[in-house]
Length: 279
View 1 (cartoon, rainbow, N blue to C red):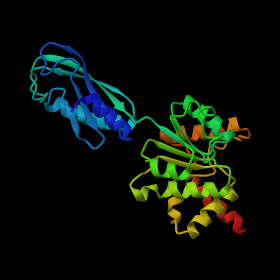
View 2: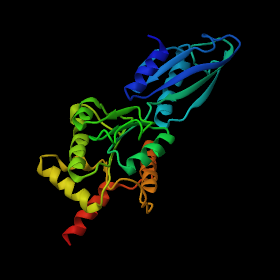
View 3: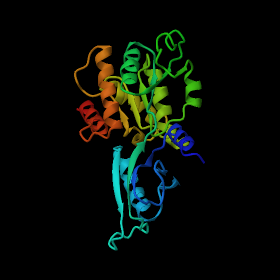
View 4: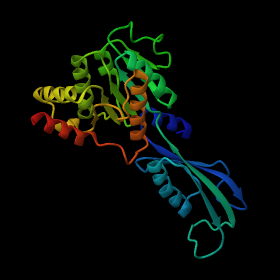
């Protein structure tokens, strides 16, 4: 199997990996410059950078690179010192560059209104591929969303074809409560069908969010399914205009993607909403 073909497959599947490449050699080494080893997120490997303890150390470093999403350069002196039990006593030096292989993030925006057009532009500039879903073809089209790689003019078609994974982000900004509820119901239930988006966000006031949650609970959806939902969507920066709202949503998505430690915990906020409405 070709390493680069496997990289393409891994990214399309929404998985992660690390690629280790010998970038410099000096003297006698057990491999050759540009040798590559791909380390998948499940620990399996493809290719080699020479074997022995060198390869074992690279494997361990690759797991950290996948987690941190930061590359690393490693240097090995394959000398005759007994203290370096590499299994590769060759007298040479090699440098190995270990880089993360990450899936391309995909943002599906449900709704084709003013906020959606601004969000698509901002998120695309931030590095996200864009998918648009709206049951009105006058709103969901390439003229309004020239940056989009996928466009659906039927919610049912989108539900059937979209396969969320760890690189999938979903934002619900439809034109009404009924469609918001329908999309959210699908989004939180995808995990039970073997799929799991990285992020699900829904626009709306706190009162609207709570009413939709309660309605979906009455339809049989477990309340714990909403723990991972970001609603009201976006970071609280006082945004008012569609452009400002788009920035706040994109900022929250980036924070999730980059594992920001100071991201507000929306499920805690939801409990406060429920308490305030009972007072």
